Image 1 (cartoon, rainbow, N blue to C red):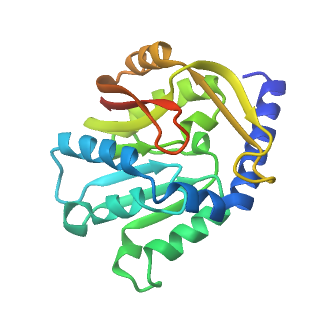
Image 2 (image 1 turned 120 degrees about the horizontal axis):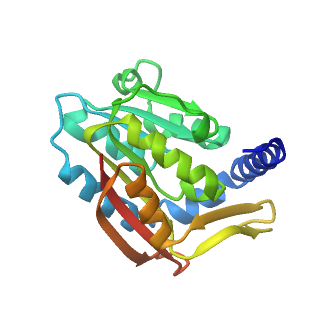
Length: 229
């Protein structure tokens, strides 16, 4: 990535972070009660797994921790370890309050909340049984999405799974000046259905599920994917 593009990407992410910090409560009130699709595909991905005694999960774009992070923490009889990442410090503060009753909560030993750009994350190869990314990768410039898929494939254990959703239509840049709120400037990007699946396969992921389904909130269609390392 050239320096100009890198600077543009950094500024874009700063704006997305500022927006999610500002509209966190509005966004959560809008989306948390309507999580049917993400939970259905999470359950589908978990159903494929042959889990060890203490599985390790990564969530990219965890938001306030509800309902996906909570479900991951509860998996495997409440023994799973979860690393949950989000760009928004406000959302991560809410996640901490939603998921942990206090510093002595047993789950605090199994949950790590990581703030920042998902593209800045670094893990050893073969670290995770499952990576979940709902409504999050789509906020990256699409060139970065391709690189992230390659890293996710490395982070997964052999036989591990990625469950995520992407835009159906190809769009280098989609911007909403006031999304959900006057303070809600927002950016999305994507390769479209066909190219996204091609890039997943190129990254070394075997696509098992590739469904196009409408979001219950705004009737927009998304590509829902479960892929195996």
